[in-house]
Image (cartoon, one colour):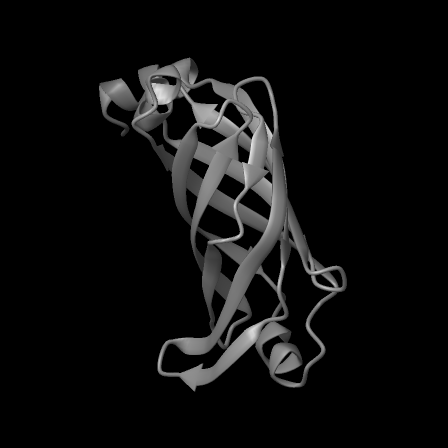
Length: 161
């Protein structure tokens, strides 16, 4: 039996499209197999944010610190800074997962990762800019894809209300 509030909240949840963004990545920095999986670091080199709530670019100062588990699930840990068209700076951080398939770990070790795979992330935003204080209150959901041949990721970002 579900708690009474669970069904009520389930019917009230709404998603609002905040923005879409893409980022290009430098070649992966493969640290190697560790206890928690294969450590692979990706550093952002460029990116763009376009949407009804945010427009600007991804500054080339962030990265994605990935733990690729032996079962082919990549656990992402991303940090970055958005610079919007009006000069506002917004720090973003998100975790999430990517499913590279059951043989994804071995393929990555062999230098032959899957060409494309889906990403699911949970972004948060932090800023002191008065025009974007609303972003500090959001929990978002991102649906995306990685293109390993182009070293590019792209996402659609939705606020969960």
